[in-house]
Each structure stands twice: as C-alpha cells, then as structure tokens.
Length: 239
Image 1: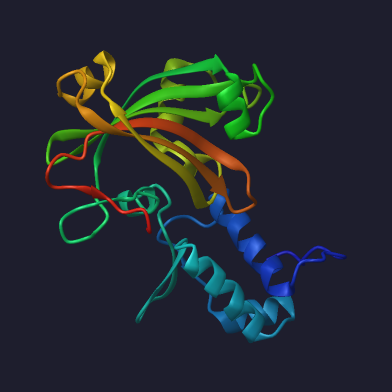
Image 2: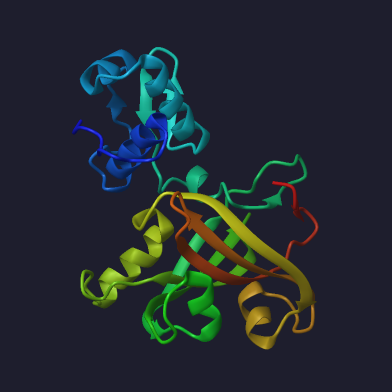
C-alpha cells in the first residue's frame, strides 16, 4: 500500500479507510478477495493495529468488507443483490428487506432537467444517463422506476451496449454508496404506470423520489418510482 498523503487533516483511521475504499471502487481489490491481516497492514503503513482495526470497522459498517470466521476479511460484491437492496425500504410480512428481480431497459443519454440537475449536483443541461428499471417480487411488478446517473461522455463509450452495461451496473460502477435520501408521497397510477405495474389506471400507489450518495457525499443516482405494494409488502420508513 502506498504511503498516506501528507498534511491530510482527516483522522489517520479515516485516511486508511479512504485508501481501502479507493481500491475497492477501482476494483484493485476485487469481490471475494481476502485482505491481508490487520497486523501486516499496520506494519506496512507504520501505524498502530488499533488504527487499522478502526478503519476496517468503518468499511464493515458500510458492508463493503466482510469479516468471515476462519477466512479473514473479504471484499464484498458491490453489485450483488444484497448490496443493491440495502437501500430498499420495502419489506415482506416478516419485516425483511425484499430482494427484487430487476429488468433494465431504455438506456439513453439525455440533457438533465432542472430537477435532475439539482438532485445529481450537475449543471442544468449536463449529459446524464437515463434508463428504466422494473422490479418484481414473486413475478409481480412492484416498482416502476425512471433512473438518472451522472455520465462522463468523454470517458465512456455511448454505444447502446455500453449504456445498457452502465445501467445494469447502476451506482456500483461509479462509487461507493453509503446513504440515501428518499421522499415518499401517495398518488394514483397514470396510464403508463398502470401498464408497467399491471394495475388499473387510477389505482392508489406510492410515489418515491430517491437520491443515493457516495462515501464522499456525491450524488450517484436519482430515481423516481411508482410503487404498488399489494397485500404482501409494506414500506418501512425507519430502515
């Protein structure tokens, strides 16, 4: 591991956590990789094992590192269903977060509206990636989402296949997501919502607007969604 930056005002354990996060996001540390033990890292950096352990605790809290008995510390798969669902407030009858099946479609690059630009903290008319996501539970459509992500056209190909690959990877391809902000309201299904959710137009639904933020506080994804919970699911605001 390279030496930590000089004159960094962050606490030392946070600097170590930042270094680990950079390696995970850049895929220098890949999902499933076993990380060297805390003593070896402390020795290589010339810092105390307590500082390294505190940095590991930060990443374990964010669920990007997993401590497994008998194996050590493992890099989590950021694209796994469990990681992708950890910001979900929809639960089943037992109170467990729902794991949806997901269908992504209609990926395209568009100019950000004022609403999208504000949510993603980009300039109005900036280029963003827009796509649709349909989430199902037990084969029933539950969430019809319109999703927006930052897009750097200078670095990423804009071919249809590349855009779909970015859409399917979601925020896990652009940063380490650690928190969300979600607004919930009620409404009635529009004709388009009804078609996607397989309900009658005018059916009462939840309307969700969510922004997911990175470890550094950068907005990674903004989505609006029409949600039909049905009889088996509920929205848990305290998750």
